[in-house]
Amino acid sequence: MASSKNFTEVLIGGKVFTLSGFESEEYLQRVSTYLNHKLEECSSSDGYRKQSAETRSILLALNIADDYFKAKKQGGTLESDIEAKDKEMYDLKHELISVQIKLENADKALDKLKEENKALQMKIVQLETEMKNKKSK
Image (cartoon, rainbow, N blue to C red):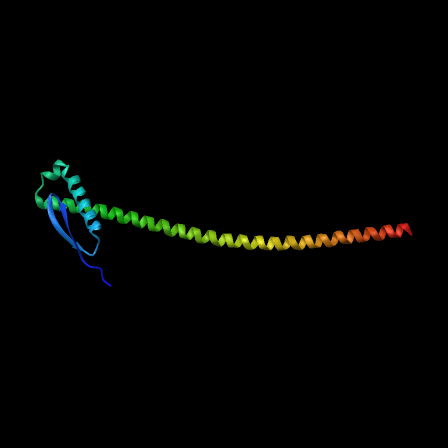
């Protein structure tokens, strides 16, 4: 089911525009707020204000493109970080499983040694009893 197209009036550079899109009205307002911020940022420069309207438009577009590429690079870096963390987590999980298996094997070996020790202790008691019986005869 397709979303309905939204229309909203926004103020950009002191002029009212009607924006339309499938995004929410809130999103469209955020886009216009961002654009107003960039306009204000550029307009604060004397060199920008002295340029022709066409040059100012190109400079504004360049500033927005710069923000886009920086955000895209940061997104790529974050994706790489996530991939690295996922691999590290995968490796740690496998290491944990390996250590758990070793621990289980060590527990089994310990149980076996305890059983052997118990049997040997019983054998000692048995032999000591036999020795006492031989001495008493």
